[in-house]
Length: 195
Picture 1 (tube, rainbow, N blue to C red):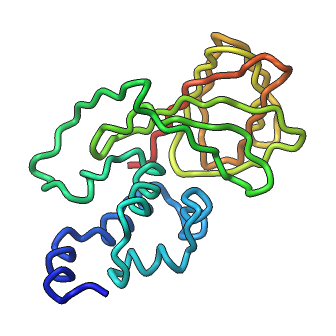
Picture 2 (picture 1 turned 90 degrees about the vertical axis):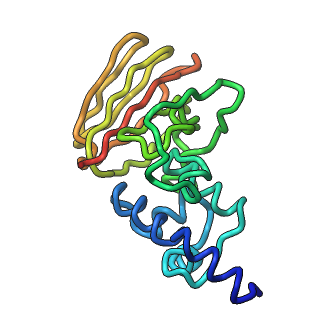
């Protein structure tokens, strides 16, 4: 239980409001954010309403989904800058839990260190799955395939991409991915939410 003094000091950071703003910008429902973080929608709702102060590990799980650092929640907006270097050794690999039964790819944020990025960039390692789940999100998406072969399903149609190919598409339309063959399939994925 937090003392009134700690509650007052922590409330000044507006952590819950910032989580809600990030979720709204990305167009995610609480349940969808929960599937990406492994946290319950009820817990996330309490955090957003300021009824629960998240632990740092919990806040880090939320931050990773939105490609922001913990400092996003604690830094004065006036001191934020649009420059960041993300070192290969500092990236964290996460499964894309679009569906809890099937994980079509693992990803690493390439812009994790950037505060309030205008776009999100990921390194994705696509997996060979028999029935890839599809999903939608706001904005547009761009994929540059670095290695391997990828089957992209978009709007019900299948498109095969090979190393060196790229694709740009409206991500509000249902889409999904799966690796073709045994060769490692790596891509750089950039998403840009509607602004």
